[in-house]
Length: 445
Image: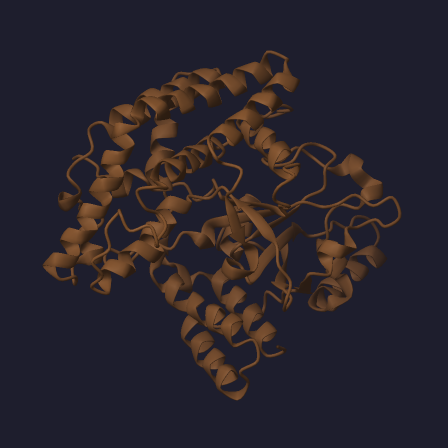
């Protein structure tokens, strides 16, 4: 069975291509070359979009003219990519060359090549406003371990039953202090010794990033991070922005009966942005190869390109970025939308926030002050129906921060569209904990 452009653009499909590229391949530079060949071989044999078994159920209730307009828009995107395929294949080669330059020991040149790639391809501008899409985010940590005497065990029990349910322990979820930089490991978008704050757009994302089980996470503690009113963060979006826009914006536009075409530049993406958007898609895929779990691993090949890009974005003088938005690699093929529902991928995203070093304070207090942070009580859970009902009551009683509250209420509808491991996302225990924590926040704003 063939695959259409719609399916091809999904992280799930690209994950499969990347897995295939790794078969019987030891060196990561060879994986990247394999991925390029497989990527373009698949693209050159895409099936007609009007035959797409994944898109068509989602637009089944559209009028025939709206369906045709939707297909025409995607055909235009596909044709534009085909027309520029030579240029785009060179873009692949440039990324592979950057990686090879780095592992050959010329890190300075690799950094300069990354800067040139982003500059010449107009990729420095990938702004996403954090507060618009992620009004609440989450952070998790493993529970502190207490060993030894009975007094220590009693102290552990007291902390778990009392302090961890209040803001008294909220600093446990801050970034690694500046006076303890030796504790910081190597992460996808940050190198050893640089403290970033990693947040998840949902609790399932946090749980999987900590390599835990979605149904058994007793060893973890969680906090909710709510961006304060009038605070803003400018993020470099390296998520699958193109696929998300098609699902969350373009499909609804055609569903409303619009005669939009790819030539209409008042809606993004459009024919004037398609190539840049597709390059961002390629960058996203290069930055999200799943790292291998190798015992004693010190150097992580899959992190080279993301870290080189981080260096350039963090120091870009024309836009003051506060961090990255990027998709989790832990869901793989576990997250899907229901047959007739649009795909909502934002819940799978991670956020990496830059910190500014202080020689006086142990934390970036300016960054932390942008959030209301509180520890989550994992024993408090509510269903999606109860969440919606209680949120509506709060909204009717108090319209303060109405836009924010509306966004938080809508999470229920988005989550109801998705499945994780063939279970409704809204039915996961972790989402019920998340809903309860958001509800508690809403009661206080």
